[in-house]
Image (cartoon, rainbow, N blue to C red; front, side):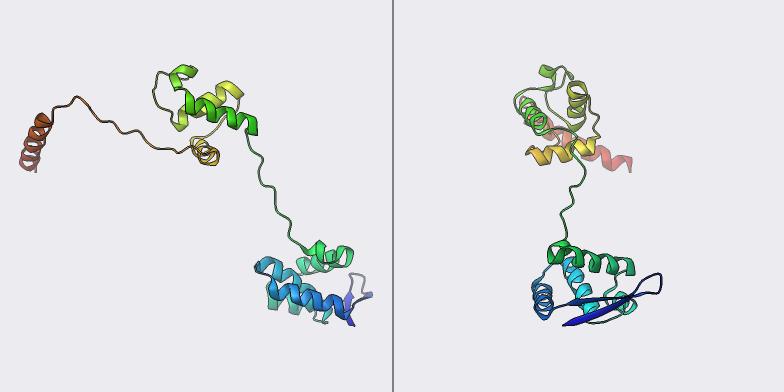
Length: 186
């Protein structure tokens, strides 16, 4: 049986116990855990029930006293499940799943000119921002739109231009003349 004693703010000494089986389970979980943050939670509770003072646990494990108190309290209330780190939801998306699918279909099958965004032949992030503002009333920054492209499976590339009807002889002649002119301006 493991005992721990905590002195609360009023100076009253609080007593808490944990049995050998629960302590062994905490130790096994701590040894197997790959996440440093999760392992630290187990270790804090183990150290607490081994009788270490919170000041010592704080120094050894680099955890604030407030966190130590929280982890121990969570463990007392809900056991090991209460110590598990919950996945954070993050910021909500601007567009719904249906809107993202619709945007993907529009960009994949239509030109900006066909959607009324502009007279351009290729989609760019700024044009897609205009489309989303026009269609859904949601303002996007260019960088966020490029992130959205990546998330929905669109690749963002800058267009390159080639002149199919260009005369290769004239191009080579220009390059040679240009090199000569570059040297004379130095």
